[in-house]
Amino acid sequence: MLQTVSAMFKKVMVKLTILNSTVLLLVFIIYSTVIYTYINQKLFDTIDSSMIQAITDFSGYNTQGFPYRQFQNQNGKMKLPHPEDEHRKPPPLVDLRILVVAEDVDGRILLPQPNEKIDIEDVAMLLENTVNDIPQSKTINEHDYRMLSISYAVDSYPMVRVGKEKMIAVKKISAITVVDPEVSMLKRLVVIIMFGTVIGFFVIIGVAYYLARRALVPIKASWDKQQQFVTDASHELRTPIAVIKLNTELLLHNPDHTIEEESIRIAGILKESTRMGKLVATLLTLARADSNQIEMEFHTVLLPELISDIIQRFEPIAEMKEIGIEIKLDPHMEVIGDKERLHQLLVILLDNAVKYTPQGGLITVTGYSKNGFAQLFIKDTGIGISTEELPFVFERFYRGDKARSRDDGGSGLGLAIAKWIVEKHGGKIRVESIKGEGAQFQLQLPLEKKI
Image (cartoon, rainbow, N blue to C red; front, side):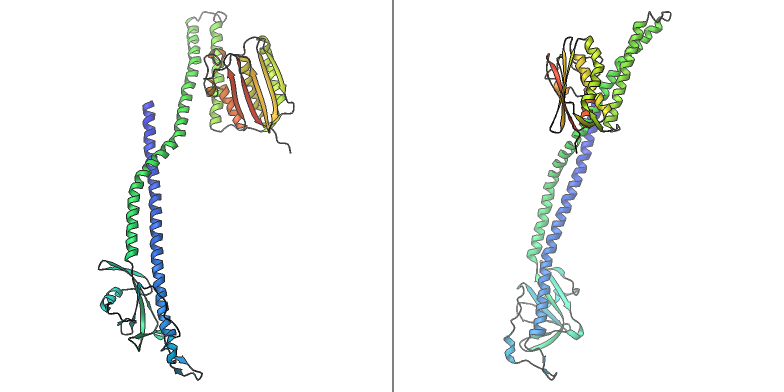
């Protein structure tokens, strides 16, 4: 059974690791893609903006600021500006990497500033099959280029100077720039991302495995707790069932005996039936508590009054064992809680105190208000709890060798229920004890807030 459970958790861990790895890897890939896309877009947006600015400045300079532009005089006739106007407006400052060329109405490519190092045929090859008004990239002779062409309407052709004096109308102006550094940087970025992805993959597997283990810790703890609960419950039920079965078989072996003659066996059946009934009821309470099926009704509860009523129930038993009970309570302690559950809580604690306090002992119940909480102490002079057992007393089915023996009718569930009731009321419970000198349970319950 344990091997089966272990194999099941291993399979779940492998599945969780794969799932976590896939999710983390996808996040990493998406993040890397976003980074690459952002950098790529920003780089080329900057280049495209520079080319647009270069074309705009060039066309504007040649159509508006060029010295041979025609102006209208007061009579509405066209005239050329005075030669002194040639030096009034300086040429625009553009990116030196950007080459601006023009295309005349006959489709010839013109260099506004002739340069012997620039081949017209190479420029024509770059501009071949370009789409107007849309930036494009091309790779030619192992070099990367970015280009943009802007066409003009027939009635608004700009005039471009070719050579020194000649003015020619053009239908298209194009900007070309080399983007080798940008493309090289993007390629290096891809290599870095791929290398990082490979390394990140192994890191992601480790992180995913760690997260899977962490995720399974509470699940496995809950599973182990449930398995232990089932095992302990089965063990607790097995004993009374076995006793009832044995006594019943003995009764059947002597059908001629009277009830008086078999009273011991009948009493044993009754005792074990009662024990089993209480155990089943307690188990049902815990099961409903775990599934949050128990609804509590919170009202104002006067704690001293409730404690006094409960102690009256235990006084006859205490008198039989010659146990003294002392009460020192603040008469104004009012808490917000479910009266029935608080009654059950106090019965569990006082029952344990009376049960494990020897003849001639003393039980002290003390209570006062402090810092918005009712502080309640139930102390006995019983057999106590050893230091090793203290951390486990609130666990289900836990019983010490003497303090919680089966002979006293305990099932080891009372203090587990007590802790659950206290926590449902937003309080705390703890125990202090010295073996052979008694134990003290301290309750802390929220007081009713006075308006």
